[in-house]
Amino acid sequence: MQVTISDAIRYIGVDDKDIDLFESQYVVPEGVSYNSYVILDEKIAVMDTVDARGMEGWEDKLLQTLNGAKPDYLIISHLEPDHAGSIGRMVELFPEVKLVASAKAIAMLPQFFEDRLDAQEKIAVKEGEELSLGTHTLVFYMAPMVHWPEVMVTYEKSEKVLFSADGFGKFGALSLTENEDWACEARRYYFNIVGKYGMPVQTLLKKAAGLDIETICPLHGPVLKENLGYYIGLYDTWSKYEPENKGVLVAYASIHGNTAKAAKKLADMLRAEGVEKVVVSDLAREDMAEVIEDAFRYDRMVLCAASYDGGVFPCMQDFLNHLQSKAYQKRTVGILENGSWAPCAARTMKTILSTMKDVTIVEPTVTIMSTMKESDYPAMEALVNAIK
Ligand code: FEO
Image (cartoon, rainbow, N blue to C red; front, side):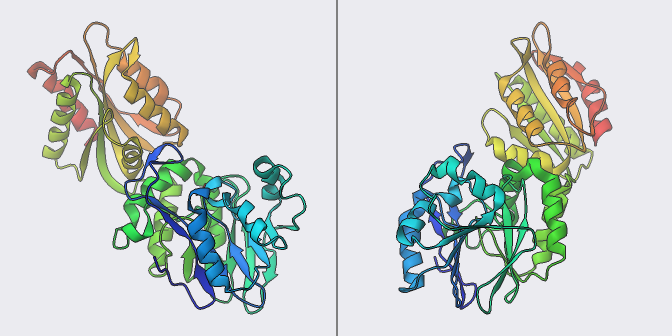
């Protein structure tokens, strides 16, 4: 797919439409793009490489764009293999290319490449350091933990372009998602991949606020050129762990369908009370990453789960463990449990929730025994009133 940035700044990234699971964990029905760029000037810089899965297509684009010229620099923003996977090929093609990266990234290179890059000239850049290519000037800003410790972003001064590494990335091959809304898959990407690192993202946003940015070139997803305040605003909300919308996620973990019935009834009761938005998710069947996205998107959540083996049904445990590891916080949560002889799901859920910052559990906790009955409605109504 043709992506246009400018005469001098060219896109040489590739779409991966066949990948089954990104990072071996996220379903990506529309694939993913691995973005890489070339800046053509007196000196030529290549901005990151691509996953080994896309190496051939990337190499073709690289050689075509260079048109016989040799790149002077390979700028390495991030060493995760979805971007660094073709560095080995880059240095085979251009043994004289200088590797430009943070000191941390340079120190990490042998972990991935052993001694294969030992002979390569390397330039460890510091915060604010500049590299002139001619009319273009690169300025480097460290962005540790957005999403790995060695990450840096690069600002090109003359065209006001921010090469933002994983920041502002999105799932979806570019050729399959050209007209797609950005926020949905960018949000799922953000909370599942970068979500734990809200503070480092805030630090990066503060640095970005001091720059005059006209274009954002991320390592995944579309190049962003217009309405940049919208994207930056969403990143600000997300990285502060503030809810984006008012609403209630009702997430349920049901073995035989009885807890599901109670969850759906609760959702109807919430809707009847005029709650702005109610989203119901089956944790056993739906994409966990999507449910995590919704948990962060809305300000409230009701967890409905069956008891199981002295704890909670595993998909709920898995969900809560994921939320915990992604630093879920600043939200209000209601709980409904089901049990046939010794209900214990609520206790287990509360134990995990208690480890999270600023999570308020509303009362009452509702307990149903095997199936929801009319006699359960008053407690359910009380829960709805507490969280509506
Ligand atoms: Fe797209 Fe953290 O790699």
